[in-house]
Length: 238
Image (cartoon, rainbow, N blue to C red; front, top):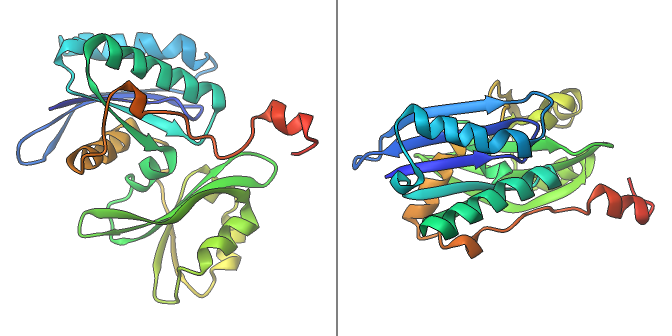
């Protein structure tokens, strides 16, 4: 099975093609990342085209489309989803949606609790909590969009002093001191793999595919979690 994975939810535009063998081994054919100042609408299609051409592939060779649903950049999310929907409809390829928080969790392989945190300005974050044990990732609680203090308090109910907690994402870097203070009685680790990766996206998508969590182009839709900047400004919110 060949998977085309796309993540346009952050500043980094990420594209990967992976091949999954019968023994579930992942063979990374190509991964491309671009965080220059061009918009994702300018970057995405040339990156996909280049990735396919490098391995003499076309969309006809792709068996599964993996797309990041967000949360993240509203414009970026729409660009990625619209592109993958078009591919799915044109070539009748199955799609799988993966959240940016799930994708970040899949950056980590150690058995632990994984706490992805994505900064969304003004001390607000997107956050979620996952457990990883015996190669299985399980989400604990819901995805949230809250003030960083509220987000940390929200998930503290699931933790105990013996928990190994890995914090990951740009929010964990930005609020490192606050996290260290809040969880001073816990065993905490700060990940070095904080970039959202289309490889991790593909890994999560394949697990979802095995569990029957896939469908046609209607299966993928944006996950925003909070209002757009224009809507917040209209309502007098930060």
